[in-house]
Image (cartoon, rainbow, N blue to C red; front, side, top):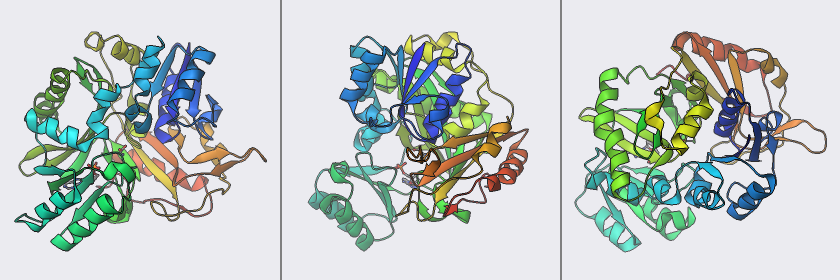
Length: 423
Ligand code: AMP
Ligand code: GLY
């Protein structure tokens, strides 16, 4: 069986590693992949994850049996629909279903229409109407969000009218996020701890995975800018069985039913970004895929054969399988390039990688790495470079282990948070 995974970050490395451990042991391929993925899958590194036409051509030529679309941009471009048209099996939501992530206006309107708890909001498609709203009688702080995808940077906080007007200009007039900012959502601020719950979904049945929590800020103590995620842990201690039950009945099932009613059958992995407020759990955001770096702590805990679940999703018989998880904990710490999430340099050699390949309790997931064609060495190529995951009997055990091994790896400008899992 030949499987192509589309994407090239730590999440895709975690997906591919898990696929390599299934009983069928499929032949694995990646577009574009990265320096670590290249060890277990053949990478087509010159093809971009967003080049739908080339990926469809490659799928036909290489006769892949399945294409797993793991990252947001190709999902928003309808890659799953295009692969299915060729008769090849695809894992991931259709373009229409993935709109739950690629349009904030769509997802907010969906939640409002179906009474799914979320922050109060208003949406606008012109600078003038949004500016009038901001100058009116509203409570601060508010969050301004681009309608479209913006590499996790499209949500900005404003504590007063001037700041809000500046952000509005930055998004809608300066077009800092391009067409993603053609429409905007302005919403009330919610306070509480954030939890991620990923779930498998086959259009009718939804099966939540174990919970996790992400650390979005760049520095210790939640200081610094928002990033794509600096580290994760699983499970979340605050996500109790009672809360899980409540979310199942009030968020997960209603969301899947809502998508069915809208004629957008949701198949794949759905990401529920939740916040535990004083007045209950609310949805901060949906994503149409595994989180990165949430996948790096959730997938290592999965006991059931990953491919069995993927096939059950595609064939719409998820109700027939039992999904089992290890009764342990996992922590992932991201090693990033100095300057991230702003400007940073790349091309530095990474040393100490071989230390990791020995120990089964650890996984080293590559994100921004490449194999240098000139000298065959693994070099940095992105802001988030590597993710080190350790599993342990409980969270303190996993934390101790992960911080005990990080120093094996190094590259110029490497930085990481020292408090992952502590909250
Ligand atoms: P989003 O792009 O919607 O996922 O937002 C990114 C991050 O911004 C979230 O994970 C939160 O940490 C923060 N955020 C977004 N919206 C709100 C809100 N209404 N209240 C508080 N924090 C928010
Ligand atoms: N870690 C957040 C995300 O994947 O969107």
